[in-house]
Image (cartoon, rainbow, N blue to C red; front, side):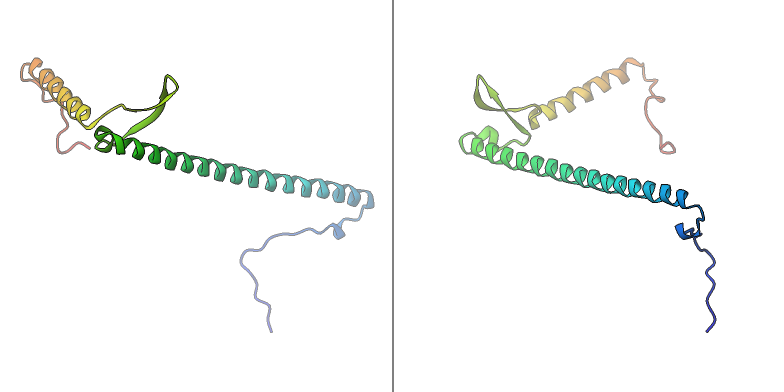
Length: 138
C-alpha cells in the first residue's frame, strides 16, 4: 500500500537526534522548566475563569436581591409598584429607594429636548437645512 503524502506536514526534531550529551541535558532541563511554566499558565487561566464565574455569581445574586427588595417596597408604595428603575440605598442608615428618571421625568426630558430643538430651528431664521440629515446620508 502506497503511503499518502500530506501536502503540509510539520517538521519535528527529537532530542535523540542531538549528538552532544551535555546539550541534551540542558535541553531536558529547559523542557522541564517549560513544562512547569505551561502548568503555571494553565492554573492562572483556570483562576481567571473561576474569578470571572465568581463575579458573575455575585452580580446575579445582587440583581436578585435588589429585585426582591424593590418588590417589597412596591407592596407598600404604589409609586414603587408602578415605576421601573429603582435603586436601593441607605438614607440615614435606613433602607430607601431612588428613581433617577421616572417615566414622567423621561416625558418631560423629551418635551424639553423638543422645545430646545424647535427654538434652535426658529433661531436660525428658517435656514436649518444643514442641521438635519437627508435621505442619502447615513
